Length: 442
RNA sequence: GCGAGUGUAGCUCAGUGGUAGAGCGUCACGUUGCCAACGUGAAUGUCGUGGGUUCAACUCCCAUCACUCGCUCCA
Image 1 (cartoon, rainbow, N blue to C red):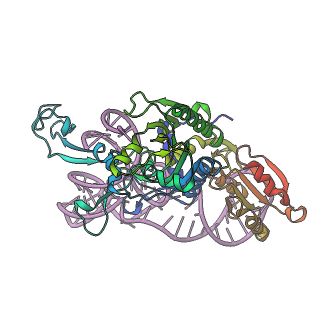
Image 2: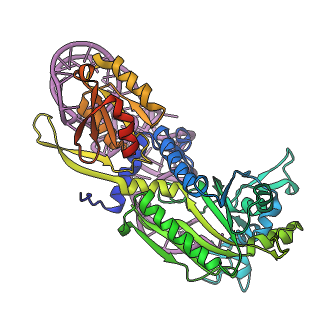
Image 3: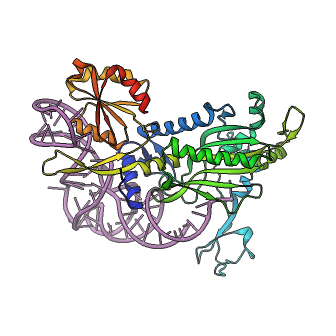
C-alpha cells in the first residue's frame, strides 16, 4: 500500500505529538520547563526501545560464537579519554567576537587579540569548550578528581579487550559488543531525539589481523545493511551508504549507513575501520600489554572494525517510516470516512504485539484469561474501554500488529477473531492455536 | 553560538488590559455489539518561568527556559 506523504516538518510535529500523547517519548524534566537535549522514554517507548536493543543483541551476540558481550561503566579512569584523544580533541579554547558574533578556536587565531573575521579587538575571554560531560569522583571537587562520562561506549571495550579475550579464550578474529548510555555536551541538540546529550549506543568492535581487515569491514557493512533491510524492515529507498571522504589518519575505510528521517537523511550507524589506533594508544598510555599472541607465539596488535549504532536514532527512524494516515470508513454521524493513524511497525519492535479486546465488558473474565495466557510470550495489552472500533484505532496508533477479539460466540466455539493492523482483515482462530499463529506471524 | 518564530486543558488550537474557551481525547453510566457509533454526565489550566508597568496582566515591557526553522557546529 502506498504510504501517505508528509512534509518534513509536518511529520516531525505529528511524531512528537504522538510520542507525547501516547507515552513513547517525553521531554525530560518537563514540569521544570524541560531540559535541552534530554528525553525520557515512556511506557510504550521503553517497550519498543528494549525490543530494538534485544533484536540487536540477539543478532550481534546471542546467535554468534565470535562476539562476546560487555557491560562497562559509564565513568572510566580519566586516562582512558586522554588515550582516546577525547580530552585533547574534544577540548578547545574558544573565544567569541562581541561585534560579529563569530566564534574562533584560540589556537587557530593568528593574533589572539584580533577577530580573524572582522578584525575587532572586542573579544570575550578564552573559554574552554569540551564536548565531554565532566564530573568529580569523590567528595572533593578539584581538578585532580575530574572524571568524564563516556562520550562513546567503544573505549571501555578497547580497555577491557585483553580481559575479555582471556576469559572467553577467543581467537582472532572476534568481537566485543556493548549497549549503553553515552554523553556529549552537544552545542546544539536538534531534531527531537536525533541529536541529544544523553543517548544509547549499540557498538560492536571486531578485532582482527590487519591483512584481512578490509574483507571483514566489507562483511560487516553488508551484514549490517542486511540487518536493516531484513530485520528492521527498512526499504531500499530509505537506506543509503555515505562514504567518508576524509578519513581519520589511522583508518582505512569508513562508511555510514544513512536512513531517511522526517527531517532528511541522517546517520544511523557507522561501519568504521579503526586500524590499530585504539589498542595501541591504550597500550601506550596504560603500559599494559594488549597484544594478541597466537599459538605460534606471533604477537599482533589487533586491527579494529567497528559497527556503531545510535539506538535513539534507530527508534526515531522506525517511527518516522512507520507513521501513516489513511481514510477509513466511519460510523460517525455526518461523515463517511475518518482519518486512521497507523504505525506500520515491524511486529518484532512494536511496543504491543497483541491486544486482547473483549467485545463486551460482560466477557471481561474470559478475555482476561487470554491475556494471562499470551502475555508471558508476547508483549500484550488488555483493553475493555470504549467501542471495539475505538480500541482498534488506539492500537493502530501505537503500531500493534494484531488485535484478538473475544466475542459472544467465543464462549461456545472456543475461537477468537484476529484483526490485522495494516489490512484490517480478520480471521477466526481457535484459542488453542493462538500461540502458534503468533509465533508464525511475530 | 547567531538570527527569526512559537509557548493557553492530555493533544490541536481560538481568545481579550477587567470572572479562562472550543474540538478531539480521557473517565463514569446507559445503549450498542467488529473498525475513532450514540446519549447523558464528569474531571482536567502555576495561560512556559521569573520580574516590571498598571486599580487590574494570559494580554503590555524586560529577562529567562523550552521547542521549531535557517545559519553555525557535529573529532
